[in-house]
Amino acid sequence: MADQTQKDPRVAAVAAAEALAAKGEPVTARSVREAAGVQMAVAAEVAREWKARTAATVAVPPVPEVVAARLAGVWAEAVQAARVEHEHAVEGWRAQVEQVEIERDEAISAADELAAAGQRDAAQAATQLAAIQEQLTQQQAAVETLRHDLETAHTERAQAREDAAGARGEATVLREEVTRLRNEIPDSK
Image 1: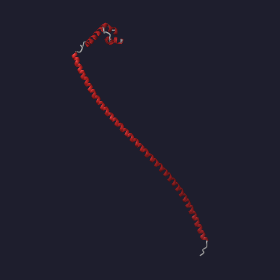
Image 2: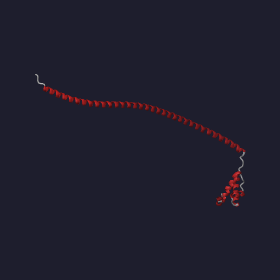
Image 3: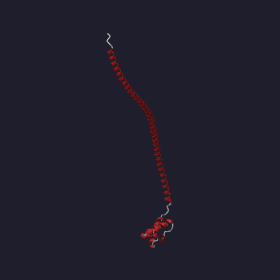
Image 4: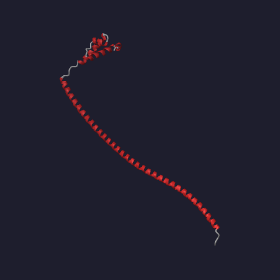
């Protein structure tokens, strides 16, 4: 406050007057000067202005009974109108809340139905997948069996070719032997 006093003593005096009034102490030139630390001329001017302002606000006469009675009637009508308006607003809000709750319940129900359908679809898909995996396993086993049978057939064919080649060789030897023996046997006719 010392900085404000050096800059503008009037501001300090006004602040001191407001502070004194707020404490309920009388606003006089002396009390303003002591509180603000300003010259008496500044304190006296601010105190006079303060008193003039407060006197203007205090000088309002009390409300006459006729005006007070009419004001009470107007006030009662205003309160009643406000209550009616409030009740209408509350009813509107309740209706909106009920509608939102209905929509919320419908949305929850729809979400539950979708979740149940999704679970059913997932269970069905899992069953189908298991069946397909079983078929695949069976087909893989059948392919392995066919592959084994094919390898066996190749081996047997190779053996049969080998046996056939050996038999042809023996047949050739036997034919040659028969031919030789025929040639050795004299003609007996």
